[in-house]
Length: 54
Image 1 (cartoon, one colour):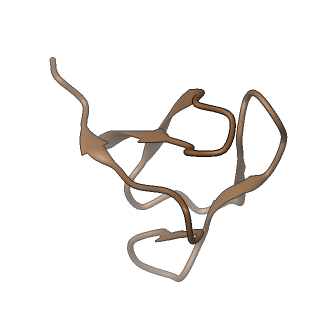
Image 2 (cartoon, one colour):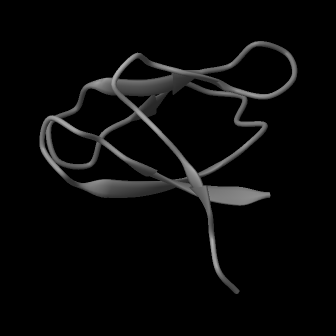
């Protein structure tokens, strides 16, 4: 499932998959937003998520 991750430091929103298998970087400041865990991706502190509306 796709989720949107707003990053609180630069206020950019990045769309990622909940089970991302690679490290995802912020589109605005290149900070790591989430890391793969073998299941659902783990969010970095300071990130939140919301489900993408279809």
